[in-house]
Image (cartoon, rainbow over all chains, first blue to last red; front, side, top):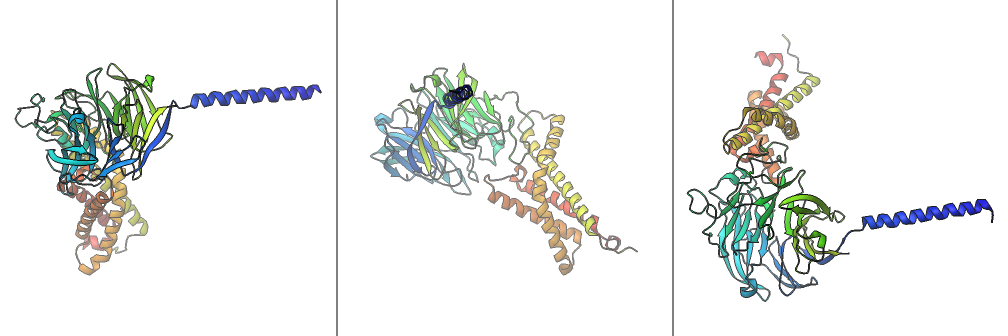
Length: 375
Length: 155
């Protein structure tokens, strides 16, 4: 064979080998450590997710329905609970469903929702019994005060603490931001209640004149993610900032988290909310996002499917359209990884499933329940 | 006696000047409402922080007011031009009243259309809304003053 043809073939083979190895390497580098499967669709603005012992899911839709889905996503039950005064508008409606630890014994769950009307509304909490796909024995056990106008910034997330009490997050009502510093009411607070709505005797401000006894912490804007870390005994919460200044905080009883006095955000119009980023006596966030990602849900991963993710916080972002993974070390964030950007979904809620997978709800009129598991 | 009507160029210049001054006044006013609210929540708000916030808002918030005020002022001044010969009220006072009403209407429309209950924090209260409307009205008054012809000015 002619030498020039041999040389030419050699060059072609080398080039092909190089291209092939580069392609394989880049595919390996780009390969996602997870796969996303759609468990259910046609959920109307799904807001929160809870896992039943039989493998099924309970999902709230902000527009007023509570649905039970089988493990493979089939609709088992759908009910529009007769919650006293339920008001659906803008950010308001049916919010969180919480299955307390005793749910297996008494089938009693808690629902946070917006009650009232356009002129006067607030966050309410109801207990109810879930039996055979229906809610019965619905009782309103708490009404946040005062009522406000406008359908924004409700908070509405719940967390059951190891002692059985429940934390409920309450937004500042948007137009009432200064009230987050007013200890006499519930706007812009995280409150702590017993499961029947009573005020626990060891709440930080119980018995203090002019202070609402339900308050656990204050100075919040709109908390929509709250989790308990049993390893560190920390309560983590995140909250929406205005333009910039979304925060991740460690919540301690009786503390003030600064809004609207101390903030890294500015108003949507560009105006300064406050001259202060920090202020004495007000706790600073352990992590913050500017520009805003609009954090809407959070879970602490403790499953076994992703060993590298153990103990990490996962945060859904509405505006950010991504899932944020925060690596923690001794109560501090040491790294942030942004996942699911390839889907470009507004993400509302994230939960650690009993099977070790992560479950997410997308935020849209045709919302989805997604399962995130290893490749 | 010079009774010539103002030229188109003079009107445009007067409008631009009036618009900029109205937006700046609105920004400074908005800052005061925000700062007063924060001052009520803290032990002290240093004067330097106060001034810096006003300066920050002039750079960051005033452009939004320019966008809001431009159509408000333009439509109000056109309305004054059309109405003034019919109802024979002093043009300056007519411009002040119409522009105030126009801004209040604009704020209501913006709040109806915007995703948040109230876009501009100062307008959460009646006092804040009226204060912003007065700033817009000041712009209208400046325009009328700058474009008033000599005869009218003397008469």
